[in-house]
Image (cartoon, rainbow, N blue to C red; front, top):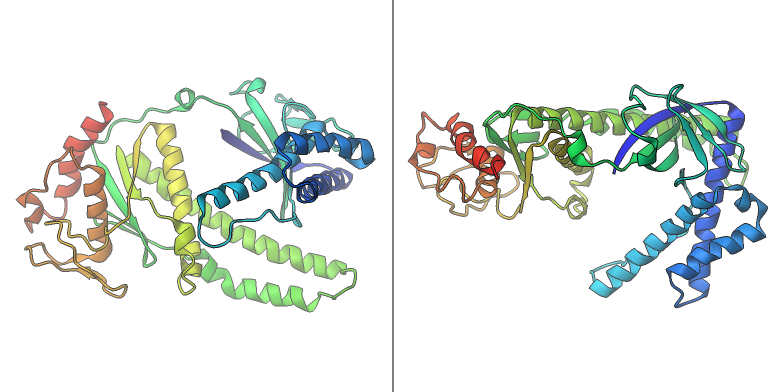
Length: 405
């Protein structure tokens, strides 16, 4: 599923209609959840049929497109199914019991309820909420795909406006862009000191967007809190302060994602194979001392875009198990334990002293290319060849054998 996103431009009355549609979606979702709680043992079909009861009972639910009501029901059933799965698998800790939605920000249509004009870049919503015709702001051309390929249309409310997402069902082979083979392979080790260090001993500094914006974010948050009135209707000044605070967070999020996208594209364009660790970031952020820095580093964003661009440009991407990549020696394979403060790799096998992250990236590359380059010979241990042998040796053998399969 590929997503095209555009900003929506319309009148204030249309924006209010979108807000009403989003509130209706939240109402339907919460009603379905309450119906499931009150009637133990019911299944998916029973919850889907309950949306028909809601449409007959409430006029404002009937005004919303029927497919949007179905999608709200799907959200409820997805959370219920996830809870059932976690219980059956006996995962430790909380099982993720479904919660009532308080901050729904989107409404999703399927094949009906909307009409797209690709010539004028406008979209019209035809349900009873009277959203009407809205202009699409974006650089992507709407004429390179067929309208039947649009599976769903989603409206999202963000701090800086309203956006529409067109979800397309496309065959990856139709959008793959072929690049000239570079005969190079690279492995990256993400970290907190550097954004990543690759197997060519090149590092990218971590931008730390949240850390840099933290002082201003705290200031805006204090300003918002001073205007908050408990158990009273909030003033317009509070709403303005809240929007400023939300926009500042949104800016940091977009900066982080654009940085990860840029670095991922460069890696894909300059290498035939990219290896990285299969990290479980969700588990890593449980460390209270490192959670903020890990989230600010955006490791998941980098991996997401590497895999996306790898599919788009026909490059090979490999996620290797992260076990012992930091402690294993890339020369002899001996396990050298290190504390988090130890920044170098030292082994008695004759390998030169290496940076910790550089040694880890070599281990990642070794795991990703095992069986294709054989054992790392004494050429790797040669002090004169250490700097640039890795990419040449691996690129000339591994990438060709991988890409020829």
